[in-house]
Image 1 (tube, helix red, strand yellow):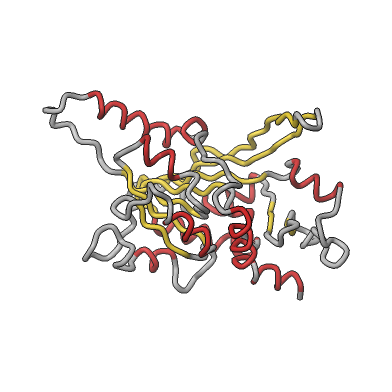
Image 2 (image 1 turned 30 degrees about the vertical axis):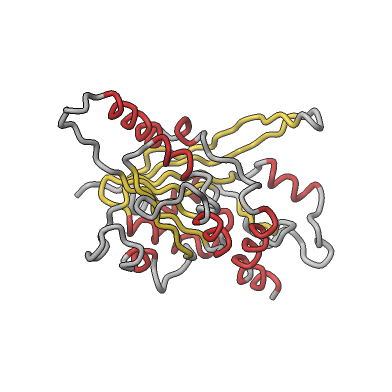
Length: 277
């Protein structure tokens, strides 16, 4: 019962998270252009465009990017400045997060359409949501799969595992041929997972942190969810429909200066491309 309750209350718990932290918790994701070549290419194209002669007929195609689980916009704001040839759809299932994002001084509806949506939803689907005339950039036309890049960074880990496949399909259906999904999330045996087994989270005595006997699925202290992936699990979500460009465990040692220790972090980083017919 309490596991189902946690799953159903996920949006509420994320709303409480953003009520507490607003836009102060997460840092802007300036690192994405280094970790993902597709993001770096957007910034490079923008620099080249700035340098060309004003009379040049060279035009750079506007790229449409979808950010999944956008929170308060930490992925969007750096790119908005560094790449002028981009438009963004972005969504989160926290209404409070979207409210904070829209109040940002850099928010402009001509380049950003932010909305509340649950990625696990099958009715309406994400395709249905983007077909809404109030959201669709192509005003007066129906939506067609037109997303060039999908940023899906630390999103699926916050979703119930039985909803992962439906969530992946939502993304696949809106990606244009030749478009790419950029995926990054927690890997099995990441330090965050190991901590669940070293010290109980708040409220552990009434609701244990481990939510499944056969899956790496946990409850955080604030009531939000956390899942840790294997490479095979990530491949299974996307490779039936998309070409796998990259899917590997990214390991690094993060120094905790306060405690004077090194913390082993493990993430799965992947890129999947929709084949051109």
